[in-house]
Length: 475
Image (cartoon, rainbow, N blue to C red):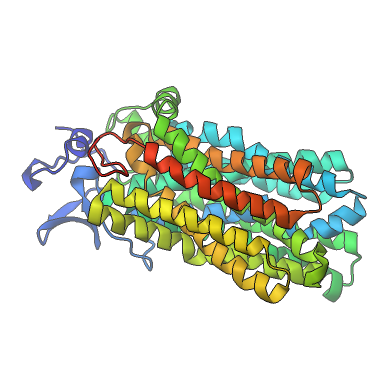
């Protein structure tokens, strides 16, 4: 019996567990369970880990876990490195507000097709090579960000920087491949949340680096923001080099080796894409993801500008960047809490519990966004932003607690669709503001809140094979 067959047949007797001698890692049975070192695993799920040991960096599970979030973190920092500096870029390149919004839209639009493509590629060549390639790409364009000298060159650089946002899909694929079903919601939410934390860190990092060059070194405004891109590019290059030399694709080793040695059946990108993309649930969940992660991307692009330009807030551009960073810093724990809530719902009521957790978080997110939009003083806007941010990210975590169940055989395709819709949402929000709410950010945020609340109703229509739906019966 092959290990793949074991993984697909559900629970098995320990005596039936087969390990291919060609697999890179060999697991042992002890104390009534299966382990690799101190990590307990589920052989019936392809030796995925059943615990998250945060202080461990052991291969393959926890090393993959830490590289997954760290790589997405770096990609996120580079991806949004322009946002906190846009006040200065706008002045030096003589841009108007409409042009700024166009570059914001392009920065998230560039991610869409790349996310659709990278998910199936994970099934074909493995997440490690995919992530290394994306990080290498984004390093090049982060460095090119130093040379933009016109509106059009800024558009091109920000569009291609957006390709790095596809690192999220790889992150979710990677942790889903390494951790068992009972904790996959928490694992996915934590790696994505800590990766998304880059959105908050970049608001503070880029402002701090700019202040260093401008204040301590004594450079001018334009030279300071241009040289600021050196820092995220260097850090990301170091992480990329470490991943390609020290990480593993799966509990049994790198996919390219496992395919070549016949340890597991080879998957094609086309097969994965077809299975994931033809599943209606992928698209329903994708629209909801546009209303949480898409919202996060939009806030990352607009919050600093909103705080700096709303007269009643009376906030300068540097302080505005610090305040805006609070939104991203909530990822430190908020997205994980959504995954934990999803896993708890699964323990109590199966998939129905996961759907209830996600729908609840989505509805509360919408309500809190409306409250945030109506704040006229900075003293009220900051706590409203923090509360709203918490539920945005909790919803993201709860959403990817559902993703692994939609079509396990086409996991890459499902991750691609849902992840891409996050960016489609950001593009839509950006277009909505550009053509309907330019200079009226508060009204635009309020309209977004109502749309988010309405999207929670889509959960009623999800029917996942072998799982209960929101009304409670098995599908």
